[in-house]
Image (cartoon, rainbow, N blue to C red; front, side):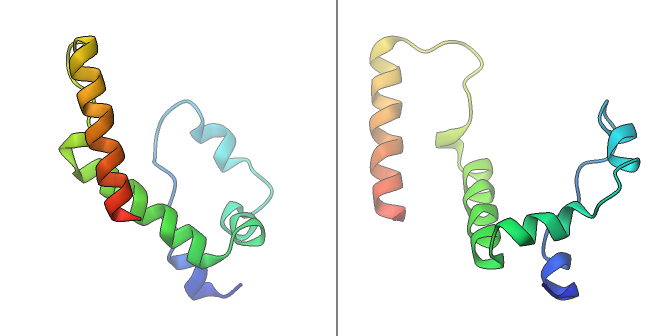
Length: 85
């Protein structure tokens, strides 16, 4: 658990209702995360989230799609996920 490993973990977002509690925490949450997860797993998860955020296939539509459209989207997501694996 080195300082470079901890620098690869993104900071928590600022603001919001939980910031008061985060500031009063008596432990380093990044050290705790590294205790439970290897740095490779953390980087893998980060890569997955970045991919999901940037791909329009995974974005939520503004209105509820029809059942047929939902099935089509689910199939496209499945196929894309299968290719990525």
